[in-house]
Length: 160
Image (cartoon, rainbow, N blue to C red):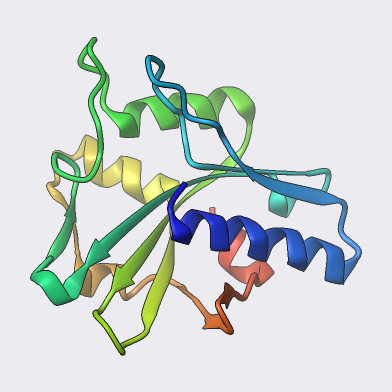
């Protein structure tokens, strides 16, 4: 589990506890010979928090200009792309999906994360797009970070 995933899971669970919302976020365990549908599952009877989240982290300080479907997502041995697999999982489970993208800006500079509704990811993928430029990612809702945790706000997770 990456630090970003761990912080996001912890942030959701603290948010649920502090706000009296019945819900839990957890990281799906990855097994060596099976593919993982997504990174974080959020379970709640509250419909705004019945989510599936894929997390990606890119280093903009090392020259990353975009998040690419070919470079940052996987294709399994049967040729099924990660975007397709997650889309199927979300459709079958009834969850709302998001791609959470963390932009690492280098030592001494903050990390920012953004929530992109999965619907937008699939539309771009199905249109044959290459991915999302960093400038485009920054147009999506910022997931604010304070004190090592991300602020979970309802409005960011209901846009689908």
